[in-house]
Amino acid sequence: MLVVMRSQATEEDIRAVCRKIEALGFRAHPMPGAQRTAIGITGNPGAIETGTFDDMAGVQEVIRVSKPYKLVSRDVKPDNTVITFHGSSAAIGGPSLAIIAGPCAIESREQVFAIAERVVRAGAQLFRGGAYKPRTSPYSFQGLGEEGLRILAEVRERFGLLIVTEAVDYESLTLVERYADVIQIGARNMQNFSLLKQAGRARKPVLLKRGISATLEEFLMAAEYVMSEGNYNVVLCERGVRTFVDHTRNTLDLSVIPAVQRVSHLPIIADPSHGTGKREKVTPLARACVAAGADGLIIEVHNDPDRALSDGMQSLFPDQFDALMGEVKQIAAVLGRTVEGIPRSELSLGASSRSVS
Ligand code: PEP
Ligand code: MN
Image (cartoon, rainbow, N blue to C red; front, side, top):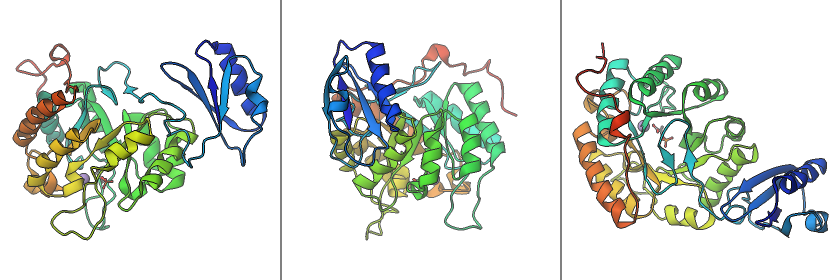
C-alpha cells in the first residue's frame, strides 16, 4: 500500500499519516520526491481499508502496490534515487557516473596506497578493496580483516576517496559499517536475508551485488529486504550471472540495467571485472555498461596483478585503468553524463605529499 500525499501537504500532514500507519502496527516509509511525498506501508499481512487514510489532511490517494517489491519500485518513488556523501562531491545515481576502483583484496598498506594514488589521479571517487573475502576455497587468502579496514581508513584520510568494502557476516558488517562509506554485500550473500536485514539497519549506503543466478525479481527483493528495515540508500550492482559459456568467468547481463531502471528508482552500477573474469575483456565491457546506461562502474585494479592474492587475472594495470577512464568519459558525454573525479583543489597529491613507507 502506498499513501500519495498532495504536493501542498505539510510536514505535519506527513507525520500524522506515518503515526496512523504505526498505530495500526505497520511500518511507514516516507519517500520524499521532487513533486510530492509518498508513504510506503510495509508489515501489513493483507490490504488495508483505503478509507483509513482517504480523509486525512494532505492525502491525495491511496494506491495498492501489486508488485512483490514495493519500496524499491518507481510506484513509490518516481524520481531516481541519488546517494550523496557528507563532505564529498561524489554521488551515485546522479548525472555524473560513480567510478569505484581498487584491488579485489586489501593485501598490504604499500599495495593499497600505490593503487589508490593511481585510481584517484585517473578520476575515481570511490575506492574498493575487500578486507573480508568470500573465497570459493577455504585455503585461499581470506582477507586481512580489521587490519584491512584500518588501511582503508588511511586511504580515505590520505586521498579523499570514499571506501567501499564487503561485509560477509554479522561481525564483519558491524566493523565495516564503522570504517567504510559504503557497505558491499557480495553476490554469494545476496539472499542471506538476516545479513540483508542487518544492512538495512546500518547507517551507511549498501552496494548490493546480484547473485550468480538471481532473477530480476530476486535481485529487487533482496534490495527490498534492506529498504524494509529503513535503509533507503541501496545501489544495485550487476556483476555477471552463471551461464553455460566458458570463454568468460560469468556472463555480464547488460540488459538488466534498463530492466532495473524501468521498474526501480535505485541506482544500478556494473562490474565488468567479475562479469568477465578476464583482463582483456574488462575495458570493452566497461564501455558497453556505460553505453547501456549504468550509473557507474566498479573495476578491479592492481599494481602487480600477476602476484595479486585474489582475482589478479581480471585486474587491470593502472595504465589500462587510465585509458579506460578516458574512453568512459567520451561515452558518458554521448548520453549527457559526466565523469567527475575528486576536484584537483581537493587532491593533495604530488611532491609535497606524505610519502608511503
Ligand atoms: C568482489 O567484489 O571482490 C566480489 C567478491 O564480488 P562478487 O560478490 O560479485 O563475487
Ligand atoms: Mn574480486
